[in-house]
Length: 406
Image (cartoon, rainbow, N blue to C red; front, side):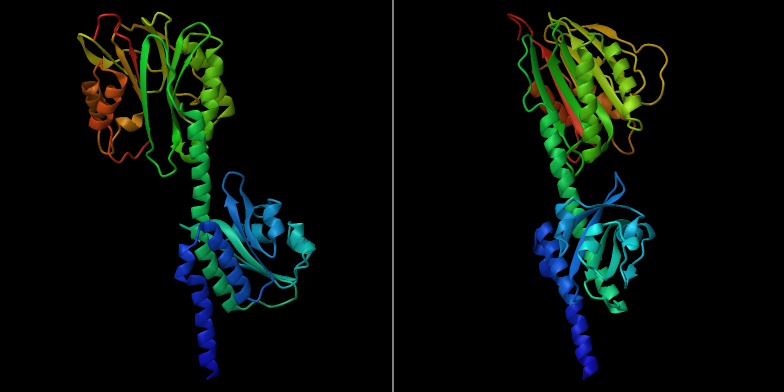
């Protein structure tokens, strides 16, 4: 009879942390409810979740019961140090029956009067993404059953914690997208413009960007670029590079000189990030185009009365790949009335298992010296993938045909 009661109690405790109703809660509510249940089931005074910040290699207090100060104060624990840091580094549970100041780096645990602590790592995909720990104000010996239950709760919390981290990153990335990609394209005399941005990743943004602006000299700056990677980290680097390019464009109207200065900035301040960019300027009379490209795919130029083609220009090395020799090239081209310039990132034309020339040829065939909105629509319908695996950015600029021209 006694064994049956123990089995029933064990089953109740397991069901409490695997209950399907937890999955129906919002992530923050789920973590709070899970900590409440763990604290109740283990008869603990505190319960806390710390998630790994992969950039700083710190554990960040994310949710807590009985230790709410950890979250309010934004407690950060270096991985490898103290109680929680040791769990994250060794990937093993840690039990402290008698907590001393030497055992912890977070003074809140001592100030709270905790005598005993039990903590376990949170795994997802074989990686440690956080730590779940419980504490008692009185000395106690946690059992193997307590440990098993806490690890089960940690596995459940890991999924919720990952969802939460992704939601936070997604929100931040989308906010960056709204601030860095022009919400509406400017009105520029003599030119018509259109653009598209299609994310190829769940975060909704990567390192692709386009930009167009008027310079004090009257020239028009046109940019298309791609920072390797996805998500918030790439978007942040992209934002810094975009701002730097705008700043350098105020120093000189020569695209090659702008990209030379930008390459120096990327190599020094953005080491390790691979960036391609194409920068062009259009003359005040709209008849001349100066262009330089740093590892980026060449734009397509379509003009009335002649077939569309990739611009014939040298492609210099990408930004940030190492010390380059010589000055980057600037190519001068005519931009006749009615001509359309189609700039794009590689997500438009690259396909797995297919040489890039196939996509480039399809793009050239699709581009007509039409109005930019129609040109973007045609390109996306005929060249763009319905389910892109990489971000796609395109920017179409057409020189107005002039009076009496269609």
